[in-house]
Image (cartoon, rainbow, N blue to C red):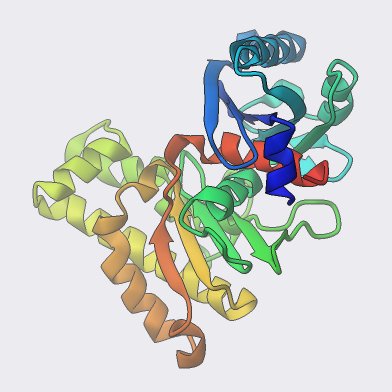
Length: 314
């Protein structure tokens, strides 16, 4: 990326992170300065065109917000939750946005924008955000595991996102870590998502605390409550298996743990490292770091903007 040239022309990029209930958007310069940010609702009674209209309106609003600074919009990037066929941009499955299944999102948005448009899976753009400005800054070989309501995954090798044949690569949350274990929403059994996601943490806590959020369980663990501490030790155990597998398979420099449950990194880091050390070759284990994400809730929108920047050759 020719940063000096991009700054001289005062270009900026808009990144949109589309989730199951909300979308987050921001305007950012090529050197990472956030100029403005907005958010909106992505449910809109499930109507795809209403959400697309809201995204387009947000792009126009951000453009107006930034106009006074003299910057010109160069491209728009979108990161979207779900199984996205790439590079086509067709949604194959989106559990939290069911009416989007089969929608050609790339075509739908590109036809209504008058600037270049690029899209990616949400976990992939989160990794790009962390590699650009966050915990994996400057690294070329990175794995990211976002722990939210579900569990995502993204892999970067030689600075490029690993997509696979149709763009479905990196679904780390559906790696089997417990043969014959709990059935997953994907239809398989024993997937990582069933043991380390926010949903899993809340389910494990239910016998002790009733209906609670994973954040409440983390608060209880920090108060020293044994039941909550034990839940996060189990999270660390399963994540340790997953990280050992990722380290052996991809030999990354860094594994980034993100998402809402990732904010409790201090509660499961020790068992994660212990299990990973036990289950990895020494040569692999010694050169990989496991770290918490640094960009917080803007990782996805930052990464979407960065993806648009890279796709347009800046």
